[in-house]
Length: 192
Length: 254
Image 1: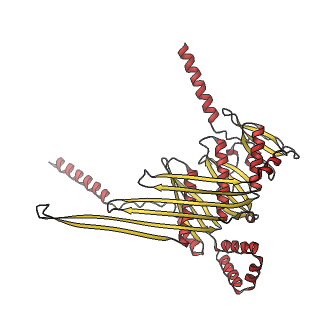
Image 2: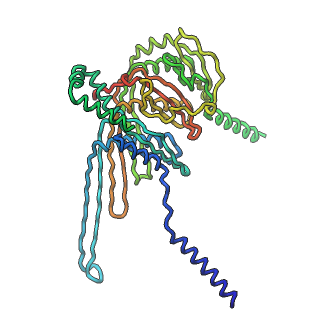
Image 3: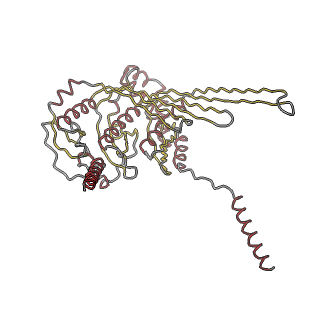
């Protein structure tokens, strides 16, 4: 009898332990690209327009995953400047009488389409930080930060004007706007 | 006996094919670190073909217009597959290339794929001497270059970009493709005209996501240079670094 009671307690303890394991909090998946996300946050605070892109290839091709990530990050930067969003929601409800025992049936149909579109020219976009990869069987995931440094973008604009229209550049240099832009660039440099 | 002979011949053929198609990773020093302006490293099957190809590349890199587009389409409902399509043309002076070819010669060659009889050729101006002979170097003997992950960085007044492509297939194709991708990345750093349309459809039970990206290229470029090559041991990808003075890349009006 004593032995039976002991075995019962042991089994009960085992079951309780198993159940407690099932009920434990789910383990949070660590973000493999958390370092890049932190870097993106820091860059955004500095005024850099930045996009973190993800590229996946299911055939172990790291080169394709990287290229996809670069395009994704570039598109995200473009979306920061300009994006058009269109949404379409269709909802259809009908009540049918007498088709069921309680005399009423409701048919619902719902569909929603959300479309975003962007078309943008970006100058001076470049990569910030290293490309990071994760591998899981044949699936390669790449993540990369692409961004536009305001100083580089402004300088590139000034250089273009200088080259294509020197008179306009001279007028710009003489204006207050040039001083303001120059001071903004200095401020940006100070935060680096 | 006849059966055994046939098996031996078949096995021999398989081994010959496998060894021929296996990527030749050791390359001469001038391939990993190009010699500079006027020199060109090309893949070809004969010296004549190499000189012709080098004349085209040097002319296109010295001054040309690049027109093209890239599209990428992804639809979650279609097995998570991605369709990618690139279409581009280099416009350069054929006359200039023909004249240049008359002043070039093969300085050295190194076998890349004996089965396909492909070599990497060093082509340079006839007036310049060949570089001193050096033993081929395995990429593993080279340290990871500082430029391995560069996209759109300027150094010494030159804009730089890296292209990469898997070496799982034919190595010569991989190196050429990686170089092309590097040039496109360089141009896109100057300016990128990009479009993206995404669409999410929901019917209350499941979502379906599709995305289309397209990039247009319309540039005049000059003084493009290949500055380095490397193989990433982790991915087995061919990496090529190219550069150009920032001012030498101009956007052409559509």
